[in-house]
Image (cartoon, helix red, strand yellow):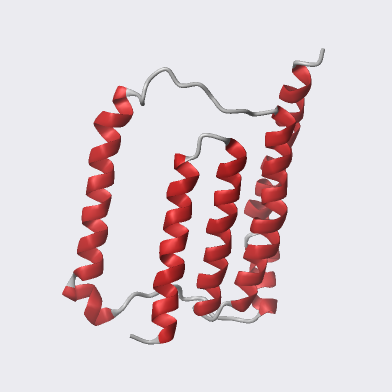
Length: 168
């Protein structure tokens, strides 16, 4: 096993552990910090795959700007620890646990199958320069890019309205 493969598995484990911690936290600020860990380890995985530009965008846009917005909205809403009456809903227990077991079984099969081991895993078909990424983002995928920015703006405005509702 090479150093690159070892680092890939280490950062993958950190990303999965951060995602599990994100779901396990009771306080929203701690969940947001766990999400920063996930974003950082994803950036490291992109670096290991040779996508330096995508890694930089991951850190600047997601781990930086979007997480600042998340924390701002959480602080604006004054979100504290939520009180739960039970340990979880029955529907989540009935459908959630079998879904997790099924997902783990499928992942185990895919990762250990000899059919995928012979072919290898194709990460993506796009390899290009920063100019190519910009051209794709602002020409071919302009509408989804703009819709995402409008949705984030609407979510922030909704958080402001919800936060100011208690002050009136």
